[in-house]
Length: 491
Image (cartoon, rainbow, N blue to C red; front, side, top):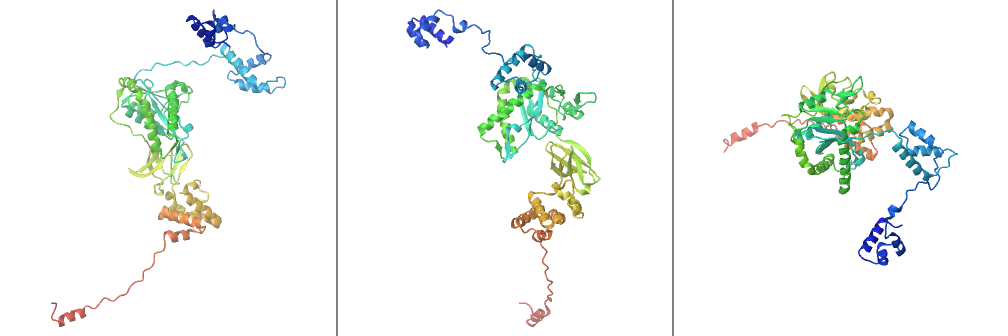
């Protein structure tokens, strides 16, 4: 088929005085074809739109039925309808006819379908808005030391300049939101007028009459910085569209940087955080000019920064545990019945009593988890070893895999008596050295000779050898004095 480009080349050659036969060869067509096209029009202008079908429409007879389905459920996909129809014996449809149905449904939706939601591009004013949100990084398949690292990224964006920053985090908690927000504005050095989020439970709560409003503690944080809170309509994530688009672009940039790096594995979280930080700095370099416009109308930071954590007063239960953020943590049994001060941070909790720091523990994600330190409970458990078998949080009483293996070996040897033997071994670890007990258990398990608590104690804490008392008679110094006297005294 001759193209418009070939005919234009023919016209150019003829216009420059080239003979028809030579011009035809240079244009890639025969001389007869060149003679037909040398006076125009172009091939595309010769074609008449086809107003007829080249083959029968396989859906003509049942189109009213298909149209009724689309009216009833406009979101139905062509594939779903096609698979439903193909199951009917009166409709011998072939796989290749799916594309025909898809084209026909697309034309119907464009001419008769429901109105579609229109997106409205917004005008962003310098210094007015900051948007932040959390995004999952799971799809990037990051590993730390070979182990999968499931995490989120707190993302802070200025819509006018597209300046961005953020941090790795474990959950969408209030403490994580405040820590990420404060780190962002102090890095920025100025404060926008409005901070916009979606309807995070960390920043908002549901109202009885419907809808959501901002939490008082979140308002207090923004009041400290002189900012106004804002949020999109519930269920309308696109209203927070700038940060949502920033999520997509940022994660795509991370994926590309990982390809250049040649590995998705990092030695530690600190190394991974440094990698992301370098990427953020690199992406912000081209935004410097617009960032200066963004910064000019912003207000100055307050004199001080708020603490990232949140303080709670918690009563220690008779189980020697405290409940913090829907999770359970053990504390020393001497605190039972007392109220302790808990400071809740994004990654850890601190327990204080009378102003003294007693414990720092890793904060648990989600709900229903328990962090049990056997040292807090063993002094009571060794007196009541029968409680071990059905203790609700028994898995927390295996400080390492070796202790679990030791318990299983004792069960094989002693049956139910293994609980008593294991609790005594655990008490020995708390009283002496957990590492020394673990080394001993490792050696005995390797030899297959682990018997009981006494055997472990003999190695870890052998009995002191009794030293016999020596009954030596003190020397008689009068003999020495007599010798001195006989010689007339010392020379």
